[in-house]
Length: 277
Image (cartoon, rainbow, N blue to C red; front, side, top):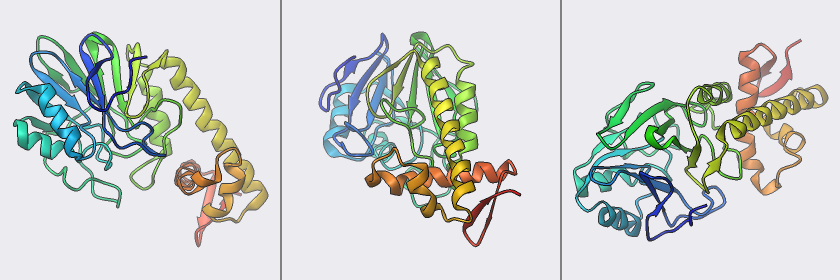
């Protein structure tokens, strides 16, 4: 796999380079991956956080050739670099915006919106938008068609699963978005954090199976513990996860419960959850 670097852009395919923002952490891995598409007229996908050294590096790499800045979603580790990069380059901002639920980047408030299968590009490349709500409602993946490379933001990540954060995030939407991905010709996934993912169709099927297995654990926990709060269910449902991550796991657990409720399989009263009788 290409090296993850914080100061230079490394090729990951014929038309795409990657440079990683210096924001490593428990939730960001080595940092947020920024992808630069093209050679003569460029697009940047996910400029990341507004770290001066990272924005400076992007300006230097693009060298007056940047035309488009696309974001996968507006969480604060992916999109806040977009506005300062646009101000310095004149590039067009592209991406979908949702109301702030406490997790969104409020600086990203004006951009060209995208519908399913909209394209951006030129004679060198075509970037196709795949609307992939789930992690958050405005999530978009970007397929660089000529390279069969899918930039997935936080829809898929190398080495871990993503957190689903209600109400903007939806487990039902997430699984359905994964299933739709199988309709596209993809050779590699370029995630928002971590290394490239090969054999993406196999990984998508694994992720769907993993989420449905976790859903089964939620239902079993409800049989044993209901009525229960979300917090009360976490230690049982996520007994295979480091307790230090249980605060984040509770968000995805809540998303699982909301999916079960939408399917008529669970009910909630006074924030206590039970299986539907």
